[in-house]
Image 1 (spheres, rainbow, N blue to C red):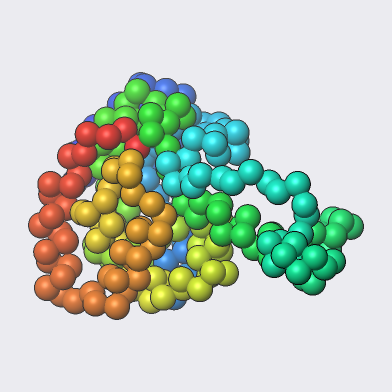
Image 2 (cartoon, helix red, strand yellow):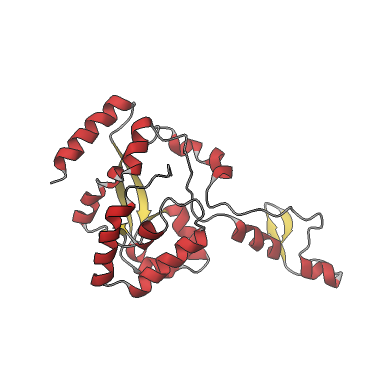
Length: 227
């Protein structure tokens, strides 16, 4: 049923910009299974190389506190003692407590508003979610379900495993899910809200819940925000 749309979009992508029609990336799904997830290409071919330079514009970024002049944590400063939790990285001693605080302050997901890497046609495909249609192939292969938590890139999945939010990987990996119908495209959403929605779905998903999410998805795909 979707094949006529797939063919038309494939032709438009080739006419719009240079590069392949499809984009694939390694994703982590149910039970930490790693697979190749497919999408229509909506970005420039050098998009991955540009990601590091765009970190400051991440929608999930948190306000960063100024780095203290004293290299000790607050506890050691109040006790007026040497660092009680020394950690050696790159042949340099740092405070393990301060290091952990810095790691927690870093955003766990990456998403950008008015992303400069997105092509002209890519904006339309993303706002209508047509770019996600090739994932029907992933569903046929058994990599994903229609409803579930979004499969994450390896670097994002690793962060969630480290900090103890691995419960979200107990749920199916899905084309759409609870986060998409409740918070998708909203600039005010935080990474913690997204994680909590994923964990909530993993705890309570059922056939009835999935049917409700599918119905709400019909409205959610027509978002106005360019993210």
